[in-house]
Image (cartoon, rainbow, N blue to C red; front, side, top):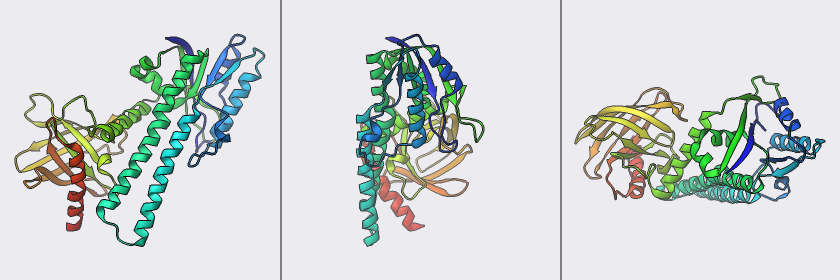
Length: 359
């Protein structure tokens, strides 16, 4: 276990334009003892690589260059340690290239004429998988390698992008796994004014941790066919409200609680966590769900009514749910250990196609 001083920075934003290291951060750097080591989430090697499908954000690049120069030009002879991982960027590029190629193949096939439903969904699901794998490498695996390098090099001050720093501070699990203790932690927030060019000290952004948990759910669905594989839900389902929404994106798990006779509890999906209450019988199901703001990235903060009928041939409920601007479809099945969730997701494609053809 090593101790460091950690600083989370705003290093680039499309809305604010180019940013500069804050006065507070520069002061922290100025106060470091002679020959201190400063680790920054950056590598000067990245722009020299010929990496397809990754665009180096100019604002971010200029921020880190300025920060490295501030450290190296200090009279205290500070040593700069570059923490970022080039190999992770190569893996991200490979994932994005695969997604782009699949998207091109799908576009060509659609241009030539009608595409069988199964072929269309095969393209969409493979594209989704490649994009999600790229996101996982960029946000999680790359982060693990950055923290590993911190352990190996033991810098006195660590300067990370706000997202990685905030998630480290908010997640006890991430702290424990990283083997790093922060004797002092500071994080910035976005500039409040349109023309401000430096971040300001503030609180860690809890929404970043929610996004990371959602990413873990998406990964679990692809890898295990389950969202929360350590616990057993009462029901599972798939919803679709967009013509290109894959079953993996619409997969959800329902938990009613032990010994709970009423059909109420919580629903976990790739948008967040929702409370729900309703009724279920042998022939129909009706319930309303509402996302919990502090545990969701979903924009819907109003009740969403679901209503479905039991399909005896399929052994599950099929129905619709209402959004304020449109309607969606869903299927719902009772779950028990051993249930083939991946086959269930595959089956949802046929069900939704049939319902679309009937409308």
